[in-house]
Image 1 (cartoon, rainbow, N blue to C red):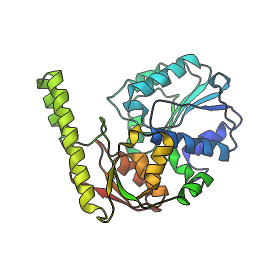
Image 2 (tube, rainbow, N blue to C red):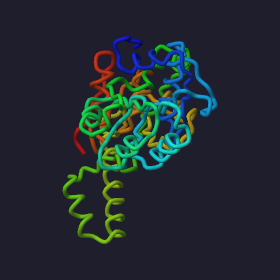
Image 3 (cartoon, rainbow, N blue to C red):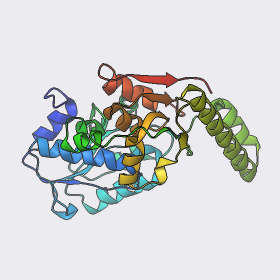
Length: 297
């Protein structure tokens, strides 16, 4: 995947003589997989990193889904304020409009340079239409977790694979697809009391998750138990082990899909509230692995 024509690779190579701090941010095992892949990429490119952000020429947020989570954007905003003498880069990530004021955050920045990279075409389109200031660099690349594909770490994981159960790992947050049209949700939000709307949303999510588990059970190898796990609550090693020990994976979580694919597990991918998994699959997985997309709820 180290392609010199890739905009993200090209950008990093142009900063080869600069010191990079690969930032931590609020997230789960999937976000740590992104960071692990990013650190391997930086090492493979011969780029030096530091554990001290105050020493860095470049503050690099590895990727993820920052614009949909206020707590992550708060970390980025703090970095822009505290380390204003450094460039700030967001590695290949999802960019969505309407959740946080990320466009204003980057446009108001006094940083000497800002670069934002998308990991799917829809996110890149959002970057292009976001009215970012002209000095902000944008590009389209691949989810950094995929740079682990040819790593010794992944080889070690493959040597320890097991086929103990069928894994059902589904979302419980606002990225979850409940099967309810977005315009219905907006209408209900407008007319219902806040508490009532919250309870109804919780019921929608619970019902949708139950349906996904039922679909997984019907599609799965019936000789093995179905193991339903909220992987967002697991530490990194437990997350990896949970995926590694499954024979088959049913999920609407991007990095559960990516890790399972890298481990050569059969994957059934379910829709989120937007085309997150489909977009990354088309951008980066299609051609070297097969993922079965489940469209019904």
